[in-house]
Length: 234
Image 1 (tube, rainbow, N blue to C red):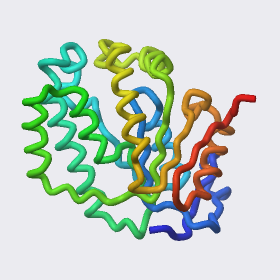
Image 2 (image 1 turned 60 degrees about the vertical axis):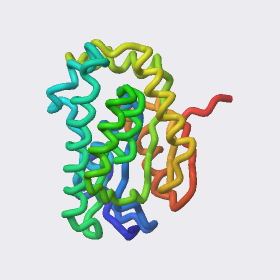
Image 3 (image 1 turned 45 degrees about the horizontal axis):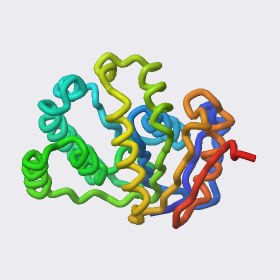
Image 4 (image 1 turned 135 degrees about the horizontal axis):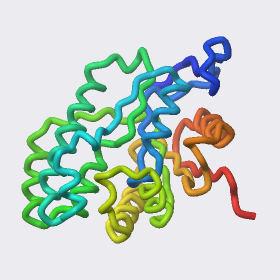
């Protein structure tokens, strides 16, 4: 699902829009652990492509704060809520005409099971998997997956800096386990072209130069696995 598209430049001035001659991805999924900046990047990409975003909405999950405070008792309801929310988002994609517009999501459907495996006990996981199998999840395959990667301490620092109330109980051990699960997942991921980005050495929230460099790089990806480090070590 690649075709010629209109890309809006960073100043968001319609007069500065340019047509990308290379065939660009129609469905982009941005992934990464909590605090890595996936939603920020998804929104910037949607602004550049003048397109729709499909974003997770953790603030709507009424069980999330309880989970962060007590993972043992709060994991299952929080996980099931996210599962149903992600399924609804996938249905939105299916109901839209993906050939007419670019869409950018800040999640992969496959990652739902990643979270379940690290937060649920064995009996809860069996129940979750039963529910998951009963849902008809026909998620479209992205044309490009962008995996933002950063060390656990970087994630923790960013979470603390943004100061979201329900995230305050998040501890380093949980982030470490989550980060390791993401690393393992994407080590084997081959369902779509994959761009792995060193998000510790890039400021996608505030730097136009950093963002533009990543955008230029990703527009040339057609297949395979790629690595992006905007500030390579010498």
